[in-house]
Image 1: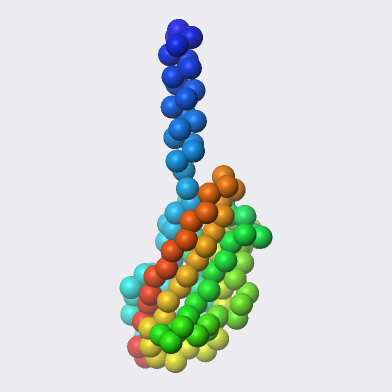
Image 2: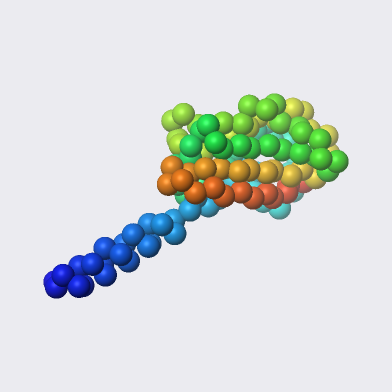
Length: 118
């Protein structure tokens, strides 16, 4: 391998690493789901480890009122998992909102909804 090709390889490897952001991998309940039983908590799994001090998770009802117990946290045993417990839910549509900082220093945020229909 020539010096020039080595430099190109190193630069390309750095570019690939720099583009890696933490994305939502899966959620419980799933985005857009219709549930017959109210969940007790929301769980979100991300593609990268999260910084606990700078990652937030909240759940709101259709009127924008917070319905979680304000205990959103990164799981101590699984640093790609965020969870938050819920107050008892009335039937309706709920919105899950997150903002996370991954250990690579990138912030991502997003939201999805689910519906509780007993």
